[in-house]
Image (cartoon, rainbow over all chains, first blue to last red; front, side, top):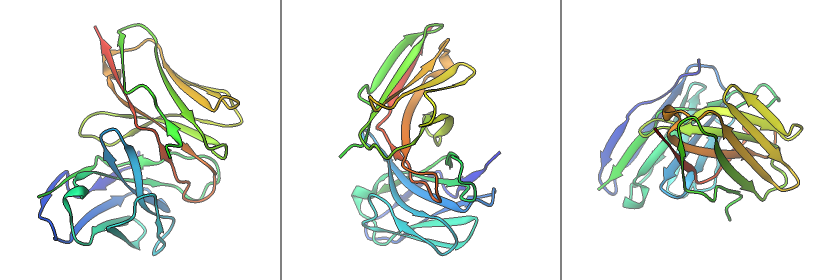
Length: 115
Length: 114
């Protein structure tokens, strides 16, 4: 079974802080994704990476950056946290090798509160 | 612009009956569709998918139907069980290449009552 692990389940930070959210997957997947989930808005893609050191902006990248130095790890960085970044953050991974359709597999999420 | 729409925020169904969750999309480039189930304080779990070359896919109690001309898909759960109570997200992807991005709907909360 695919295991996607997010380092923290709950996190409380202050406005202006630099915040790091970590995600690790154990299936040697090429593709990794960061989403945020907000009530009434579903899941929105922040950034994704199709391979090591590769990254692309998703639909809502403003205020965020990412790092993918190793295949198994994908980090989301809030450069200067603001209260409107309070949300549930979800990491996902997916195999990129196969050109057949494959689902993304999600971690359990990090509920981040910015005070 | 919401490209994947789940117009029913909630649905209540009696145990043993059929649950039907609906999803509409606007982007004709979408060709792979998925349903995810999410319990509170957990990540979404992949449930079932369908490729645009099919109009039906079945897995146990779960069946997904795709109507490409109407740009509509639905998830049928029969019989519904209390453990099916969760939020269900519909998602769509435009291609089968690397890093296929998913576009999600806003979710439908299903409550299965005794």
